[in-house]
Image (cartoon, rainbow, N blue to C red; front, side, top):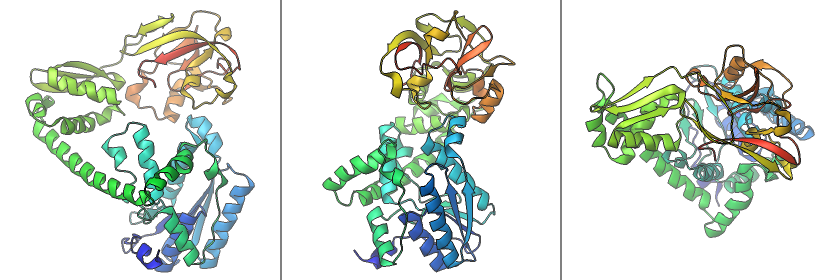
Length: 443
């Protein structure tokens, strides 16, 4: 392994002006990247950003001190953000990893406010391989197989072609020390399970597996770019006054048609794989399909149209078994006896979100749509808010809000689809009867 050969794969070709804002955690990857940027561009352009997530206590304080000392020794500008990620994750009903990532990029963007500024992160080839594996386990298509892009808008990832082992080798070559995040060894995080258990097995098959994934994702990214352009051309060719021409769409290859429909229907919100399959069936065979947010897809008289109708307000008494609701959604309501439930109360666990304590439900609950004045106290947060404000905080599209299901006892909302039970109604016991609401299509 030669440092010169590895360094040739580092991408430091930035525009001639603007700040270079680098995310600096203190780990080996970001330490090497910050060092290389400082060596090439100097203190006038490099601006390091460190986000203390408020998760690891003394260890996080140690990381922050390391970053401060490193930047001070090189005269680099540094901005440190203090963020309480556990609290923000609870409030946004997001996982810790997801919330931390979102907050980090918000901090980076705050510093890189100039039009010519770029944001630089230290993702590497191993990160890319882990991302692809995560995407595949979730059933994502070509977008997921394309992995982490080298560049997207302001965001640049110069080390993406280097493996983690090569980065640590370069750190040793330059005499750089770094700090280790102890949570990287905790297997309860999805990415860590892949890193600690799956990747070593793949390396046993191919020691250069990270580089192999990089070649694969580079090929997929090119094909994905081509498919995107072809799908846009198909939509342009199919455009009519009333919608899209069905004869033109029906001539397209199924893969191209699916991509075109995905682009065309994107303004309605994120669609499931099943929605796209059913939309394809509509194009092929005619008919209609109800989509999220109360939109209606219709394939009639050689034209594919999308119309937005105001969702029907309704309220139905809950009964056990399968219920078909006026907005097209289907739910299955059942009573289940829970044993050994002490590990279940995780606000990010789908089953826990959809289970309520039967003992607290003293009447017949009603499944309904939202109403003006609805208020809700989410489990575990100690606050009561208007449903409207809660939807704003969770960034639920306005077009989709009237389709969100609520469970109510009299006028009290005790459960909201995608959010979970209200305070006092959660099935947060080790053993007992729970009312489970399963939305058909949940996995």
